[in-house]
Image (cartoon, rainbow, N blue to C red; front, top):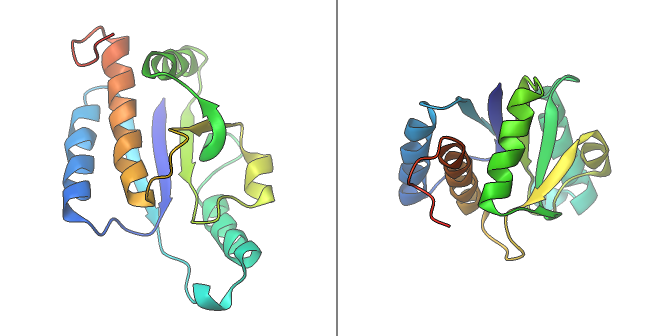
Amino acid sequence: MKITLLCIGKTDDKYIQEGIDKYLKRLKHYISFQIVIMPDIKNVKNLSEAQQKEKEAELFFRNITSQDFVILLDEFGKELRSVELSAFLAQKMVSSTQHLVFLIGGPYGFSDLVKQRANSSLSLSKLTFSHQMVRLFFIEQIYRGFSIMKGEPYHHE
């Protein structure tokens, strides 16, 4: 199985990118994981919320296939504890899921088309985080999930 995180716009803050790089390096020992950074939508000031979500949807659909298991990272998604996320990842691995794709939407969330395509949605918290911080938190949680799976001492219950 491989995991892809699709994001819109690059990470501007050096300290966040350093954290992301740290966990990407650690994840290499467990699974094929990649981040795909799609370009920011141009001229957003001239677009309505709906138009912006449609443009973002076009970018997402260019980067997913019909075989991908797509999970939205969305404030209204299901909340899991870290051990539950680990169990979910393990279940996807044994069920022969080939490609898990997680999406971080833009500032207004996801278009209805993207929501309809998604297989599931996941919330990292009821709190609101910047899109850049979500990347770091999410990658750390994927790393944590694999360390739990392997019985390593990173996670404490």
